[in-house]
Image 1 (tube, rainbow, N blue to C red):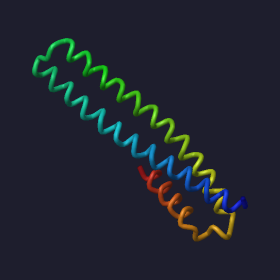
Image 2 (cartoon, rainbow, N blue to C red):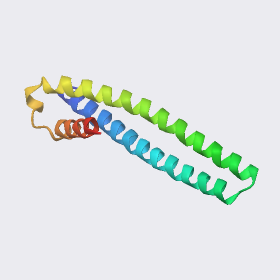
Image 3 (tube, rainbow, N blue to C red):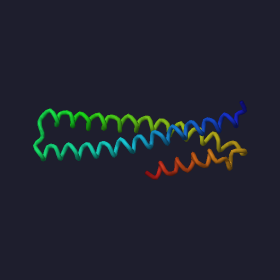
Image 4 (cartoon, rainbow, N blue to C red):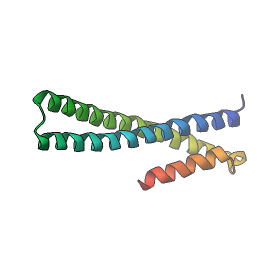
Length: 112
């Protein structure tokens, strides 16, 4: 496999992984907020201790997943950035859709 084909393949793999982790992180953040609101409502309504304990556990698990996906997403974005930098040195890839898509994702992610 040529070096350019390998770079294109790596671009596809790394950008797919980074996008998937970005979506996961977004969903876990939303889930954490929803679960916290549900817990607050349960506390206000005077729910049973067992229900409150389980709701708190769900919020804590969701918060842990936010941290985990953030770390994995940061690693994936760093690897994608390295592959994009390497791909930019290849003149044949200047207008490649995978490279442009990866660069657009990196710019969007950096803006957040």
